[in-house]
Length: 386
Image 1 (cartoon, rainbow, N blue to C red):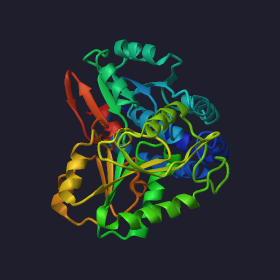
Image 2 (cartoon, one colour):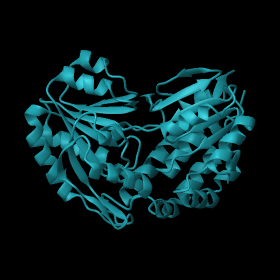
Image 3 (cartoon, rainbow, N blue to C red):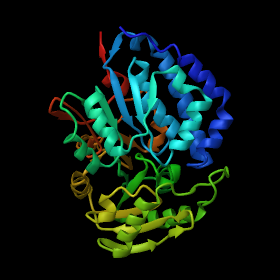
């Protein structure tokens, strides 16, 4: 039976005491708005973990957990992928994303997080880290592209538990009976959270043909109200782009024009920023099927629910979907997504207390040659009940 981490209360205290410093660090890689929300989630998560300490004390760790962390939301990601498994007694070997490694290390040092949990930060390259994990790890948590995740399955020893949390490419659907202004308002929040650089951010919009023109006009209006600027400015909606290479690749796909019916608003790079891009696309367009991870929104029209279900069934990802104007339970029950939200913003339901993850290419767990997908709860997935 594991002892609940004695450092938990100290971590909460240290983070709270240094909250201004943390906010300053976070705005180096995300907007002030995003950083403020991220910090709220962090403190809510720590309060939740405190309430769970008796249940966690009834579990044993699986051993040493290697974690390859994502580049976005560095502090909240630390709480999910590092602190959660550490809380049930695991040793953590952490490889940070190069995009956010420096500021994460600053926060860890300032708040003495590595003194309060069993944490080792690895400086190995990506390939070397996986190679070492295959030998020394009891569990590997990887967050990255699906292609890389599949390559890792070929390199890991079968006895290493492998947890993959990957791309979202999340969908947003506005049905014919939706309140258009309400739906588009929530669309903006879910699309441009962290400047669109998040796995749960909306990546494509499906609109019923009967309301297409009205929805597009409302979206253009909202696009034109977005403020692009420095991360530190409190009213910035879209800040500096974190991953230029990925977005440059996507930008070239837009220029190629395959599957793009109409360029409604081109947008594109402007120095360190990316002006939002709005495109009408065919459902099988490369720009629809790929995760953009930035301020690019493809729009697809559909005629009826059967056609919509066909489009969604061909989706290679299954992390999240938001639906406005739907009350057809039979239709909703046919959807294969880890997170399904009706008539609201998907981020309103963000909680570390809920199992997280998706189906298909959005995530899986593999151990001893067996694979399953769907939402998982990391503290339990990295421990066993006594």
